[in-house]
Image (cartoon, rainbow, N blue to C red; front, side, top):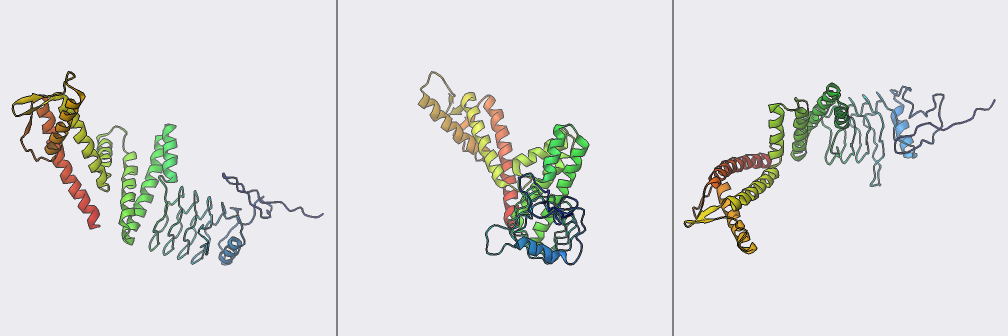
Length: 327
């Protein structure tokens, strides 16, 4: 009886369908996760399959020896698409993977030492336990969150705290590995982003209303764990404006005359006084204190708090800025 050829059953979440002939499992050789692909012939076979236009999304390459393989889509701006592919414990030592797309794929415990991953798209990729030594990662795209972060957030919504914390720990480990490797490669801007995410994942493992978690969140908001000096500038501007509004209503003393917002006065007069309050707020925040305006009543307490906060904030900005520049 003549055998009827059937197509591979692979169908990923984006609707891609494999056109290869299936085996007895219902999947083709590349999409069948039960087939052992640790042989020496797999590397060349994969290169031939890719160049022939085969569907590389979702293929299973667990434990495969792909050392020094060239998976660069030469003469094309768009790299090969290995989204949803499984490279668990694959040997990618020295592999050429420039501009490759690995969205929601798995590089768990893969050996990426000396590989070239420049411009790779790793959004949603499982990077847990990957070996990065010597790997080139300039301009890689990690995305806003790792796959472990999404899973952890979903588990928190279901009140599964222990499982969520486990995923946050995994995310922290991945960011720590990426941060260390970025520092070794001299990519300090990228390392700064990773350390922010690393410390954020650590914060998410702390008890929700603990003092440690609240303090960590404040440090993050204020300066991005020492990696974002512009946050300090933004908060400083907001504080200066907020205090200026308070001075407008609580009043200031100018040459013996008490000035404050008065609904009887014209809008222009009140606006002019707000500008004077803004000026006073700036000189108070920067601790210049020219003495032309002086606080009265409640304004004294506001000025004292602003002056203390201002001196601390300016010192913090200098420290964070110098840290960034010396990198």
